[in-house]
Length: 239
Picture (tube, rainbow, N blue to C red):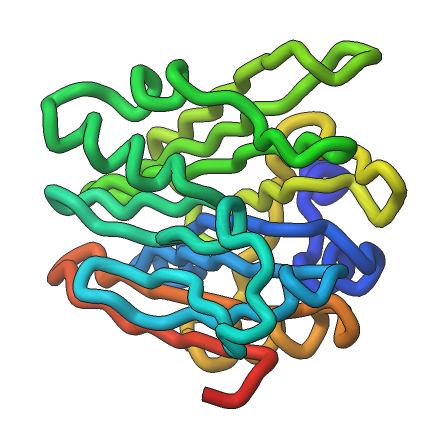
């Protein structure tokens, strides 16, 4: 019965032209490394005009062509930041909200209780967030609207205390393409993590994302014994 609830990430990406932004967390089959992936997709010129750039503590988005940047408010942010051994991954500036709360000794949950979905009418994009702990455990959350007029906020938190070798979880912003875009529904999808090698996993993700809509991809493997990291970044635009 378990196979009925575990999905192939290739199929999930191939069958959905526009999941929007996505977070993947999990454990390699050999149980040695935690896996983190975050991707961007875009439909508008402004959204597609982005690249991932490495920073001292993670990555940030930048305009590929600054002259074409029309509104930076929801598209320029730090998707990944590391603080105190914890890796934060989000699809917006709530990355900094979480980081600031952790520095103050507060929790990830307290941070997100101060935020709600994005104010990008008519889509009101969900805010998806994750924190990966040093011991390999991780949390995922989604903040989304739920009323007919799309003005009320609801928050969901998912905690995974003991990741399973060869399995992971996938959370994204939209169920599929549409106008307005329908928000993700249900729990994060359990997926198979079949690659001990970061390059193999990166290639699987990048090659199966919709060619027209994919913008950027970040993948990181964290060695549980040493804390050492391997990182790969793919951008639609050449850097």
